[in-house]
Length: 284
Ligand code: C2E
Ligand code: MG
Ligand code: MG
Ligand code: MG
Image (cartoon, rainbow, N blue to C red; front, side):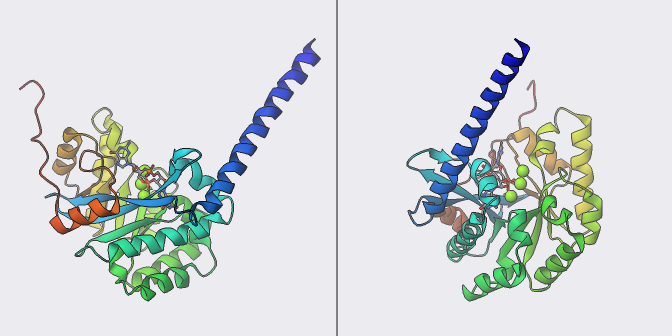
């Protein structure tokens, strides 16, 4: 009986494996045609300073598939990352982001690069070529990478980031605090910006630990002349706490959701977000 049961389990497991592999193949297939079929788009989320002045926008990819509906990047980027699709997709994102950026008065665009893109042979030449041929100042192009991208080959990563920064590109470390050897990375790499992962911002009001980490990163960034962006600001209370802590830049649903290119242009021309409702003290 045990044996039969065991076999049954194996069969169920195999079937679900089949299922996930099939799903993966489907996504891969759909994705490989998504560019040509015009199913991809970028949305842009404002990054603001303390006075709600818009300093930049993060470009975030969206796949509107007629078959699967709106597929979130968390679902398809990892699949693209496991095939060569990530390069084609990444190039589309760079070109599209630059195209939109050109009409903004002065803000930068912040583009996410996955580890595989970053490890690509001739990464520097590749990015430089695309940005330069579009006639865009490197200072308006921010490269967002995570610690995962630099972790496996620290020397190569340091060299690449140094070169890019020398040419005037902005470099941001995304999801800061969730990766490895964070302090080492800060010391070793040429960075303009630290993006505090939203899990810490989220925990700020509840846990002493998160609040302490957010405060430390803000001070560290400031002392080293880096911009610190708090990600995932969802409430007026978080915004206020971050301001009190001395945070220089913020991004999150409370300030603005990601918007399409047309609305981003309107915001960029206005230059700042409308003031948020006053911070309400509980009990008053
Ligand atoms: P990320 O780079 O850390 O981007 C921030 C994510 O947080 C975005 O999710 C954004 O919509 C979301 N977000 C912004 N404000 C808030 C908030 O207040 N609360 C909450 N809960 N979420 C907020 P999205 O667009 O789904 O992207 C998820 C991840 O997918 C990104 O995380 C990034 O790692 C990746 N990604 C997105 N676009 C690209 C791309 O063009 N290329 C690459 N390689 N990766 C991308
Ligand atoms: Mg990002
Ligand atoms: Mg992030
Ligand atoms: Mg994050």
